[in-house]
Length: 477
Image (cartoon, rainbow, N blue to C red):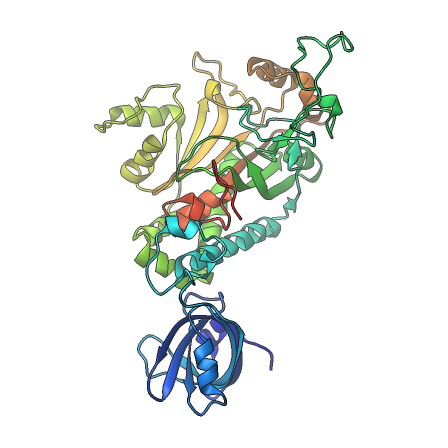
């Protein structure tokens, strides 16, 4: 008999149906004549109740081996359940124990554990109700993301993890090297007199694996732009890295990013796609993970469903950055970070706009050029307050969730922007070539996958929505 997934039996199993299930024991309760087990295989929030009678061959020996955490297989018959809250249960005809779990040492006993404690046992925490629900929703989000773009004719491109360019220009990058760090090769200024500004203490990267300084990527955007110049509409979905020493509930050193890039597209088209994208993902998850989402609403954050419904049902408000500043200045709210034109909006400012003022998702457009990256298109309007064609999507409950822009397609302006940001145009020769050979208006956005899952589930710490979080001083598992 082929094993059945427990979620399939809970949803559509019928009385008198023979079935085989495999999983891990969540609970065990013994009476004089029967033993009641709850078994879970990770496919659903709820487990399947198993009734084991004393007429089972080797009953006493088998039951003695079974404790919380043990892995077993059970063959038997489904029956209607008289218990409240469950439709069916299984009468066991055969029980096989694959692996035992010492009841004295198994960390996940039937009690509430803190998320801080569960992070120390990341190899076991997926077996808990909360983390199990998180990772099922994460899986559904990932599938929906691919489906959204594939249905629209986008090409999924794999951008490099190792790169020599800093897309954001912030310098918060992890270095990649094959050098022996205890004996790093150094530049000899006498042997290389043509190397400017080098000292005897400078690293000779020509001796390294790639022959130049290389890093873990902070974004696949620049490479995605290359592919968009050939395929029109593309997207990336992969790991990115930030060496930002921020030990907070909102930051990770390793996280996943979704970055679509569209040729022949402006900022308005970019915003249209971002709004449609969020509506699609939330709708898919609510439809396919109803039990998990109800769990988050009940046990984690009672705003989960209302936030999701605002994403799905509300038309996103669209305002300029200048208008956002005017709204913030006109409010009676005392902000921790002062408000004036030219600041980078903080989370408290974004959440006031989305939660208090508009009470729905908001797309803020046309930010000051001085606080945005070199690749964002300068607005055509010539004013004292120069802006770029950038946007942020902010949502109730979390603030910024998507950041995007129309890219600068004009060669001369892009070169000037690189220099103004202190970047060497020679290092971006290939990026500039895209403007020399068939340049087009194009746009895209970036979405941190973990930020999306955190918002969707209501989890308070981003380290609890990725299986193995990487953060300052933490690289376990």
